[in-house]
Length: 326
Image 1 (cartoon, rainbow, N blue to C red):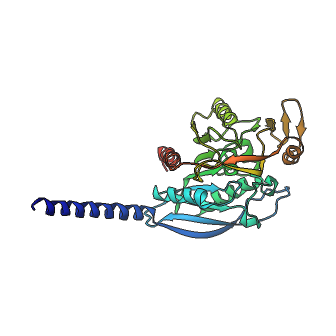
Image 2: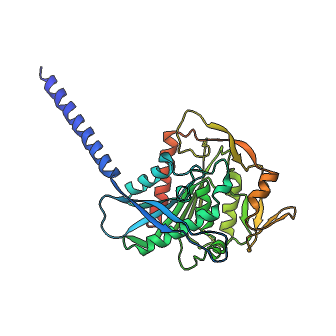
């Protein structure tokens, strides 16, 4: 008879503990979301037109003093709950603001997985530069602690924006990102000039990527180190596929999605033109058309991530940022 009350009390404490854990979790997830707009970064004497960008700003519910922030550039699939929104919410839990730029809907688009010419990395990169300037001008954020990240096409933005030559192309030498996190980017176009700002970079790659092979990125990261940036980190996630943020029992095959893994690697010259290993020359902004004629094929696998993989990758991302004062 005496054991029963103690058992009930134990259950009560367990229930209370579960309630407190749930409450703490809900409090950690609390975030404010603002819709903001600003003009993209326009470079004189280019064919780009002014675009009013739409972005979502994710903020911790309670803020004391200026915040670190990370700009999230979208993948070819557009803004997705399981990917861009997920990362924004995870950053907020860690006390870091997130600016998710919708480069697609701002231009009346949904995605570019089946036609990569709809939105170029050049356009997305200039969107990110505009977002950086917008955050710097807002007193709520630390101007020297604004990073950039993205998956696939967004990963190119995170990667390219560290290169000094591309920063000159985008007229952004007066500002710089404090950290770069390219997740499964495509590394077949290697700039001839590889000097970076020196800001830390974290390449997050998928071992079984069928869309953007990890090998060229591992090699590229090594070249960036050789060019003077000692703060380059690389992690290849075992068993992971492209876009592992979308969970599922197995990878998904899309027979109509564009795949450039058969395309040869090219050097990107300082004037923006391309040079192949065999001497093939392609003018600036002419690469997609050349690849459509010569090497792009249809069909690729993605997704099929596990909760464990997604959690580990997220923890690695946050830990990387925290190491550098975010």
